[in-house]
Length: 345
Image (cartoon, rainbow, N blue to C red; front, side, top):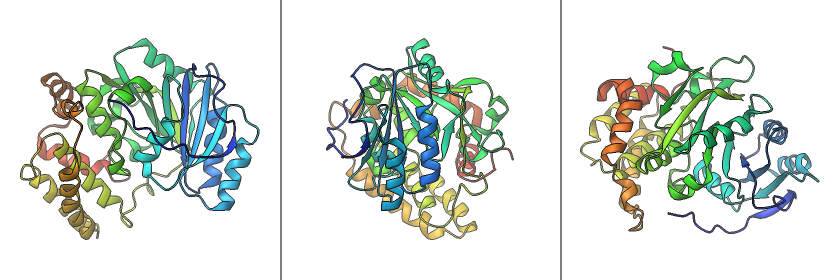
């Protein structure tokens, strides 16, 4: 597989591009207002030492005054570029387009409300990928910026593994706030699915990478610090629950599950949504997931990526399902993973 040829976005400020095509890593940061936090994320990325890098900031519709603040942060910089995308493509589509701008061997995605834990975090992530050639991605430990405690709202792994947060283990996904992907694997697996917009896009990509015989490794010694409070991370208003439910069902159908087989999961989501006053979001998510699944048409050369091999199923069983128990427990863990502070409970 390969990534699409995206239109060249508008250059706003900073360098026209990297000094050359051969360098270690690109850091990509998506921006949409929240200028103060984004400027701090840019500074943290530019301060990363011990490797050749380029920082890309892809703005997806910030107000003019906020875009001006971002432009000032990279004005005259040789190692950073601010571009403006034609619209808000969400997390999945925005990361695809930001990744396509560079040619670094590794792509590190940093949330615009996060900062690197140390000045050598990026270099250590690159070395971790280079040390294990079968790794497609490194999942970073996500810490609360102010306290250094684990950000429980960003724990995307079985709750039973939380006591091992400082350790390393193979997993089947990674958390978007901070992660590193080998560029060659990103392209080979087809990047993110734009249709997801946001929520579960990392899991969807990871399944394709695993199906290609690659591994995802959580590294508790490679961390980013996240400024979003765990108690404020999940908003029941808006459309977050809609995307959570829609995307999880859509992904399951992409990989061969029937709508009938997903009915128990769908009903469990509705119970949780009803308890939190967003039943309408969950109910809308079902038909929306079916619509996405019916429209999904992989190219013939891509179809095999969506049929999990026995080796991929074994990898998932060992590194995820085995830590969660039976299906009811796995569905419950998925729902709890969407909520603030529940991982510890």
